[in-house]
Image (cartoon, rainbow, N blue to C red):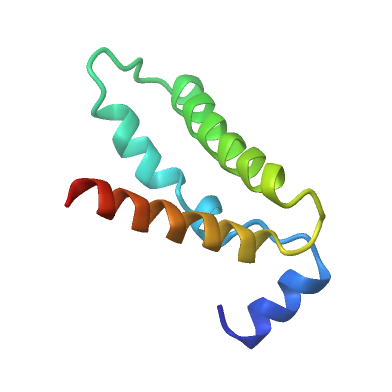
Length: 88
């Protein structure tokens, strides 16, 4: 996070970009599921559910309206390190 994103995260509610931008990756993941229903409503519902779960997790650890990007990044990095440690 650079100085502008840090400033904005400290002063406004900012949805972390990696959460907001996960939509297309999730679409591909959803479409690769066996038996996935291929229509716009089913895909949008799946993507919305994933984004909602991510934001609820961030809010669980940071109930404030600011600092969402910083906490989301922290949680993501922690998950990444824990996943790497388990796979070793």
